[in-house]
Image 1 (tube, one colour):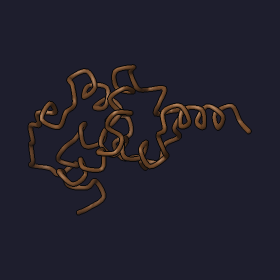
Image 2 (tube, one colour; image 1 turned 120 degrees about the vertical axis):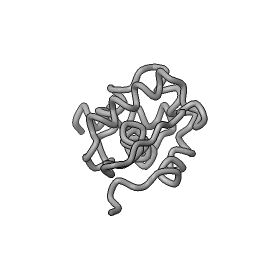
Image 3 (cartoon, one colour; image 1 turned 30 degrees about the vertical axis):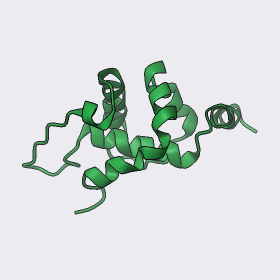
Image 4 (cartoon, helix red, strand yellow; image 1 turned 90 degrees about the horizontal axis):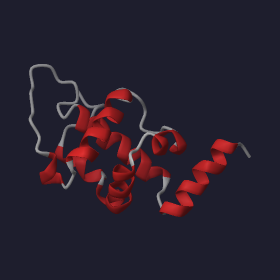
Length: 112
């Protein structure tokens, strides 16, 4: 087994996070970066506090969303985990089961 695979399994075991949680986080980060999902002519101002996201966490996720704006949400766990601040990691673990709700509140990136 590779070191990256071992690290991925270690992170998942400690945090009880699954691959789907990481994919949900990437999709949420993409929406935090661009809530309009790239639709030109739309400008949406979002108060992320209303979604339970503190400013420092929103900033970290916005940066992640910018980096992976058009990427598949299935980015290796160890890569995503390494880019999260300690505050974002804590928020992620506490909110892992409600991340899918962000997609319900905003248009999906892959829809026309």
